[in-house]
Image 1 (tube, one colour):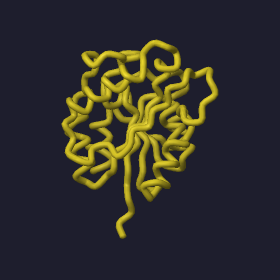
Image 2: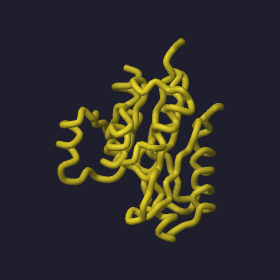
Image 3: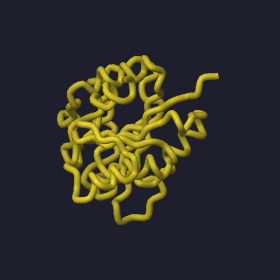
Image 4: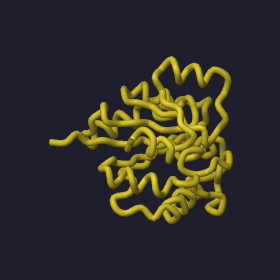
Length: 181
């Protein structure tokens, strides 16, 4: 049996432009090349998952309904064939609140690996923030840092280097130059 491989994808700054607490569907715009990259991943039998911190909900900046409308708009723009995203894992907590799922927690990833019988050696976490990369490392999968979202903070480059985290310009670059190379 072929091992099941998967990509765990942060949303803001990785799939869509990060509008800092994006809460309206008209604020959703895809990062160039993301749609084609996701299609290529699906064609290569990668299962797709979204793992996203949405602290704007916990902060009272926007509601679950607003988040869902933005998510629906992203799906509309992507036009992914079925099954599309296998699961969407959202942590709505404020960073100062206790949280089981908020990245860098690996809990969402570990639950998906178990639920969908994924091979951790064939899984990646891709995102623009250190918490994304840490979630992948904490789950025992590989991580890729992308520069298409939040600017790297001091020490991020060194952290990535010391922890074997690949760094790419964006998700499409990762797919072209590493994943499907």
